[in-house]
Length: 191
Ligand SMILES: [Ca+2]
Ligand SMILES: [Ca+2]
Ligand SMILES: [Ca+2]
Image (cartoon, rainbow, N blue to C red):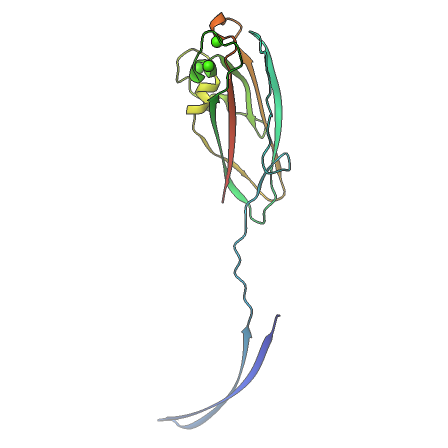
């Protein structure tokens, strides 16, 4: 319910001064505001217009040199408040296939998956990822150590494309057969 109460207050002041006696009559208009609601706005980050997407990149039986992607995720903000910044983070866990004679670690496998495209809102992020494992190319292991926080945010009306493509390195030993990882990409929208 929304109410507005208006009251008229008659004020009479009697001022006695050296110059004599003056009488002041003033009307004051007071309005009251009721039912004030203070409800926090919200940020609601969406990936492809949903709360989370799975299997953006999916490849089994990857062969040396095989590209995967590019895959696009459309990021949007379905909340009521604009988001000032967006953080992007990566993590992975081991997810090996069967008949794995030599078990390479998740880190070793991630280092063999080169990131060939990584862009947000039309700008490449590859330059922001350092080659931490010094193998001379940007790979998924590097992504997991990269600080990609503080990207431009999302207002409630805009969408921005996030694009990623990877490629299994073409020169890779047989020990990597049947090894695998599951990569998780996390997007956080901040006020
Ligand atoms: Ca493994
Ligand atoms: Ca690297
Ligand atoms: Ca193996």
